[in-house]
Length: 83
Image (cartoon, helix red, strand yellow):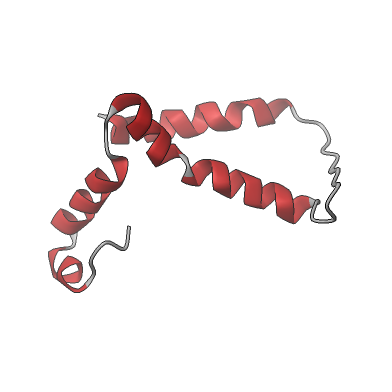
């Protein structure tokens, strides 16, 4: 199941950054720097569920929502589609 592979996916995503010695931020729009880099990483991570779904047909969002509802049945009744 893809959910059980998430730690491996995350590790593979982070692996190239292990050898980074120095970061140089270049901006042509005045919005560069560490905060822009952080935002880019967040954007990439947020795109993982849709990418997995496009490539495999596996709906990570629905699966995670189902897991959450099964493990928190009372909370889940009060929240809908928040994941």
